[in-house]
Image: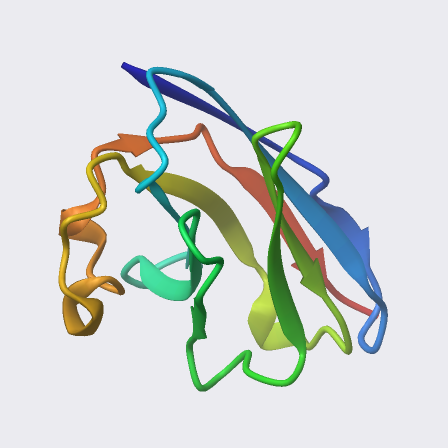
Length: 128
């Protein structure tokens, strides 16, 4: 079993930055993939970014590319999501998730169904 705990959410103004963290524990593997997803009220959960622990390759949704940066602290098994130039439309509950085996093909890695474990979520609100 893999356990995930998110932290770092909050209320910020448009243009501000925020850093989310996802602490991973349990039966991790070197091939694990961590993804960030978000869900706004009345909308479906959507992909934000993912990082492969082996090689640290990353991918982003078009809506956040150039503003968000996903990274991993190898020693702490923590994945961070640095969110810059936040917009009102970034308001959502943010979830981190783990694809434990990491066998998902690249083109499917943004699919939430490919992830085995989920955190409880952290609220991000961008409002003036």
